Length: 220
Ligand code: 5RP
Image 1 (cartoon, rainbow, N blue to C red):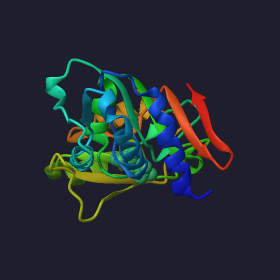
Image 2 (cartoon, rainbow, N blue to C red):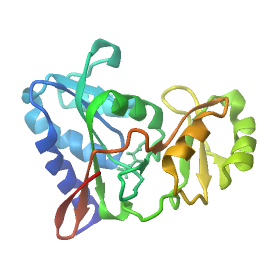
Image 3 (cartoon, rainbow, N blue to C red):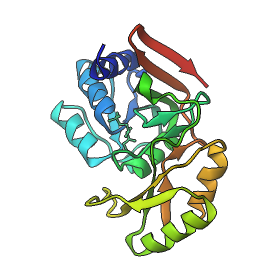
């Protein structure tokens, strides 16, 4: 089974978690794109979706799925999105596509967070994937110095990239993330950081993991 076939399988399995007649949250990335395409088959069963990026909003609208501004909605039943890494507590690294801030906001509002990923994303200790941090552009060098001093790892500015919010991404390579909640808090306390790609305080509730033997359901 290829990685794309595993992504497709988890995207289709996630349809079971879609709550009918509600507004759902939809993430960003290649796995989320498989989910959006699958969601199109039941688009008349939901009121619509809140998107975690401009790219996701465009794809939802291309399928005729109504996209709501988050400020128009009172609740989101479920948020469905991919991840760059997950540990077995369903703490995640996200932001490989640079959409981490909007993803974190939509995930915070949602009653349930269902993460969809192929089996390569489940690791014993996170950090092999560089941790993304969204920063206000004028603070980038200051934030990198603070990261080196307080967190460690090797921070670098993602080249030729601007987030949907007009900010920069710093990727921190070489971390071993054993205390994800504490690191999430410490990074967010650096002035100039918008947010970081650790989803530990609001981790996933369910991880649907694509394996060659089918979809495995992991709960926190
Ligand atoms: C985007 C993300 C994505 O969920 C993450 O990068 C995984 O992407 P993919 O499904 O393409 O592997 O956090 O900001």
